[in-house]
Length: 175
Image (cartoon, rainbow, N blue to C red):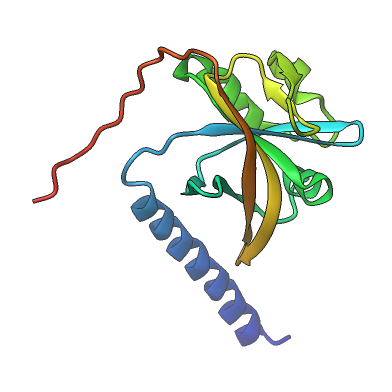
């Protein structure tokens, strides 16, 4: 590879990083709710914070999560075909951040971070004991969307820990 090709390649990579940074700045103009995804395959478990998640349908009940392709949680979900979406309180902020900083591949993140778990009711996956509510999902479809994969899960069990819990959402009047 000659010097001009190397310079062009380097500039292209720098430009891509710049475009990605701008995209993320725009995409994150408003805050998003972070959830903790839990999953298991065999004797391996993991917990992962994400904010790319969305309800898709009431009938059937479908929920989707988007994960960076080829990470540890991605592999576990690909193999187990299930995951839990745990809705958690902002009081867990430090643990949420820490769960995104370390890999669960060689570390028991639940123990390291101090997250208690219980067993899911309908799927083979842990659930966070301190979650405000959770959705147990069986994967019914996956869609590769560039460097991420969209896992579409059918909700097979949902539970809210505090039935009288008040949730607050900001809504703006559209004029």
